[in-house]
Length: 120
Image (cartoon, rainbow, N blue to C red):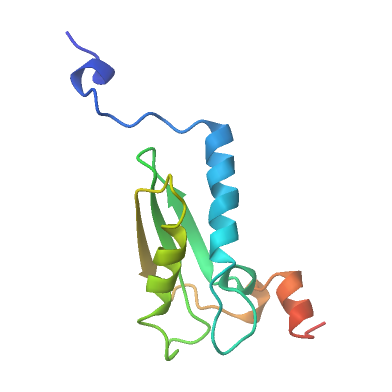
């Protein structure tokens, strides 16, 4: 009887916590390069990123939202996010889904974003 590793020699090697931490830092850095065109703050600090999953295959799945459902760049922003993430050499694929539950509000913004927008 063969174990899973023998049965599928191309199976992904599980990410170590150290590698996952390093990739997470890189992902955050890349997400911070994408800005909402109507607000001079990056999407990470605005709290528009709801979920980031990294598989052992080094594929990334992101759930994000917009400041408003009628945002004029709704069709483009997920592409900007995907393209930014795919500049990380170890990342093999990236899928970005727009979600609107829960709705975004200003409480999701980081203190840094609030400072940038003079909201304190």
